[in-house]
Length: 453
Image (cartoon, rainbow, N blue to C red; front, side):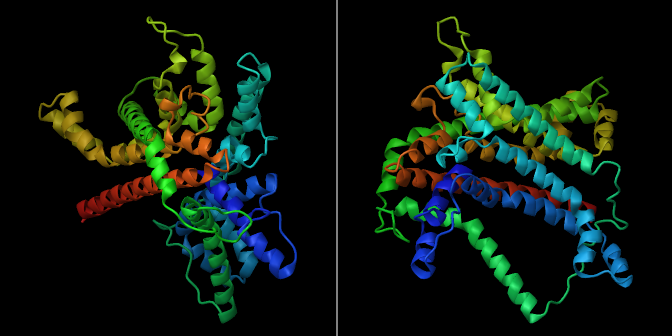
């Protein structure tokens, strides 16, 4: 989670962090990396850098190499080649990543709060609702502004590439040509890559050190190391881990069930207005988590069950929020999987007398299982560390998920060691899910290639 990385980065890049202590001792000055908005921008940039990298790398691999070679034959080189040919062709990938990063950062609630930056929209919406109450109209006004801005960002990225041709001449594009670099270019490239690698790994390094640190204050490195924080986490925070596994599993199951249903209705039926189902499911991407939490809290506030229990006090509301929040991931995974299943297979089964239900059960579902698993794993992993949508909905600590426990621990200096230990567990959980999702996708790709051969 970005807010956990922000705490670790404070220890490395803060006013009295490792880097600034070394700079002050060596050169006599400090750099305000983590002061105010600087800290939010720095922490969020490091955390969401992979979103841009993945989308941009995919776009660069799909660029037709012949276009670059043609431009070079006409005399274009260096920055002019990049500005006129490479970057315009990679623009869809960049805008896809940039719009997603904008919405994610715009939505982030915990990172600004932990860095004591309250002059941002998401923290203001949360603080007004929690301090003044649900009757405060400004909390809802800020929520509307958050939604409108997020939708505008997504729409602007789509408009920027509208009516422009980014198609490649040959299938697959071939990617940009690899070129030899001079010794100084090689050295510069390695220096840049090393710096980026250090910045990307810094939160993980800081988090790991903090989870074992006895005391880490006003010193470049911890004064000592201990495993007591992990013992405290397993003794006190086991309920957070258990709740997270239950909530994320249920949310993932709901998402893949809805994802399969929506994908099938959109791709395999002639239902009128079916495209609206897809758009409605994907619209959750443009709704900030804090707004979703406020909306659920307002909608179900005062609603009581027959036994008198308030609906907002039940943990099922948290599961619903997580499921809606991550539904787009499952829909896209199932949609992509169903697109790759030939309709002729279903038609052949029906021609042999199989009913529609039997065809879906025996033909579609087994072939779609890779997409279903990928959607479930993605929904599970992202739900496990979701905070913005759940922070408003947790009424009792016994119902709190892991991300909420992390936030509570990180609020105090004494709790940051156990919080870091819990953060390491969260990182390992997400990493395991990511590796599993990658393995599923690679296995499906190998099976498709084997089928084509």
